[in-house]
Image (cartoon, rainbow, N blue to C red; front, side):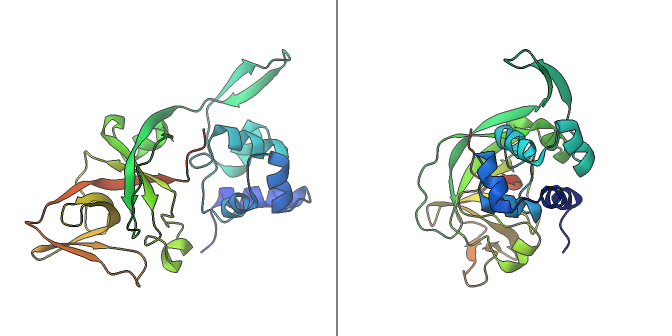
Length: 236
């Protein structure tokens, strides 16, 4: 599967400058080599997953202004002029975010689900594109790796330990959706792929070596909502 256009554009700009992924990471002061690699493979998104500080650090190393980045990658940002301390003018991304607290930790196969704290910012434009109302969004941290497999990794859809996921509490899940749900029998908040099979609700992991969770319709199970967004750990 080919990486998206924006990922190829980032890689080509790095190569044009004669820099390695490690050199880009070190020069940015905020990124690590793994993040640069995942960016160039399209596994993390520069405007959805990095945050404004890391995005600006990346563009500085790559020698791109924000308009140049938008033109090269096809990722649209709104731009405004603002003053910098030296009195010079520069263009900054006007990033319109909705910020949500992390409600709790959802188990992806890990028996322990410690309480999480922190905030996650999600672009309002992305929520609008998904038809999601901000007041219906709940954010959870992920603990465990049962939602990681080679097949979903190849599609860039892995939900890894430490990721943050947003669910839409105003939307009913469809078969095959990844959901966050409260399993009253196991007394655990879980994240898995949802399907109804006869009289049962089945929660499937991505990793085949992990057994699914099967519950009867009458069991104390509450679907919080389908996952509509995911990102790496928030670093404000």
